[in-house]
Length: 486
Length: 97
Image 1 (cartoon, chains in turn cyan, green):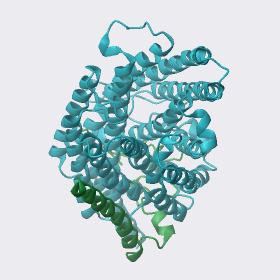
Image 2: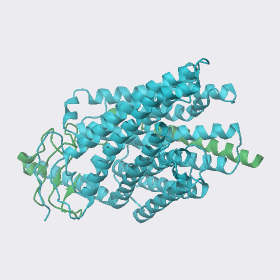
Image 3: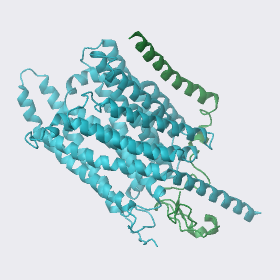
Image 4: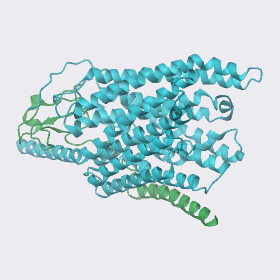
């Protein structure tokens, strides 16, 4: 009787593994295409960032090339990292997570592969146009409308694929990560199309255009990158540790309060601008109310990981996940405080804002997506990461680089703001004061770029057909036997 | 222009209504009940609660043999990536969870 039960249990196990393997196999080509493309854009975006950063303290650097002037390189960097790196990596993670959460094979694989190619063409075309001086000058929407239209088509296709997986799901319960992914695939394409239409088709002009611009720009993080990042963390943390989320009802409360408050927050970017006071106040209130979902996420992530922090020493995925999760709390609390008028009057138009944006997109989102990639890619390709040391180098370059970046620019930004608000301080003196911190920014950029190059090289080693197939985990502090694939 | 503003408002209403519909649907279909089961819904027989998945080494099992057929090969806590099965099926000779 016991043996029969064991045999049945074994059958269930095999069935689960087979299903999971089938699901991963269905994702392999499209998801890996998005992941690999994103890493190429990450490297390109990093190099553009370095050029832009260097020009801030050494204005003569590459000054003879019109297409590399700061006014073009900076929006090109933003476009490449937002739509090339962050969005492509996010779509890859989103599709894989959806397939696993729905326990359904990824549909439209051929179309999604084509969509990946189309997305690459659109980002490349848009970036070339920006560097050629034909950007739109609307922050976060610098890509000219034609290329933006191609991106919108891909957004819609991703939404359709997600809905098809949801319709074909083999689980009745919708896990919290799935809710966040719903938010990303249902809200953001709508926002993207609406913002492009309203701004580029001249539906809104003047002050209203600025309000629309920042409503959209803030929601790139709030309703696109944040849901994907949190979905990854809420899936990976329990799976890595083998423990359920500490408080599931808090996690759902967090999602629904994010849905309620986040999309109001954008107008805090226009504090002091010529907008109706109530419109700015709505943004401030929405930003402060975000403390509720942030608290739920922070409590959940900390209490779930509590008792397992020792695992950070050996698990690469956990290290990236926890860094990302902690950064989410930090950037969100900082964001709520920055939205207060009294704080904003000092730090607005300073380097502080740049540091804050990187804390969100890099320290939180990018770290969370790297965690998803470190977890998913061995399962998608059947190939382990060849070197734990390279993962460690990537992590520490990114973490130390980000810390240096944030500390330097935050400090410089506050001082810069206080000095700019002091009529007795000459503007040029304020600029001179920031120069050492701009050097620290470039140094941090070099560190982060080095980490990205290591990551790109490591991924290439996983993908190269002639590379040794390594069996066993890539873990910190452990030796692993490498096996050559037959 | 008035038609444009009408379209904007209509789309905004659809946007808001979709979120409200989602919440109502979730309540009506019991998605906000049984939180304990919900939290455990990403675990299953093969990746149960209590067993880390990122850090598991599992020896390849011969075709037809489940993990329990080789209890000594049961994953230990605190080691590498997910299990491998020698039964292939993924074109790489490895099937990962």
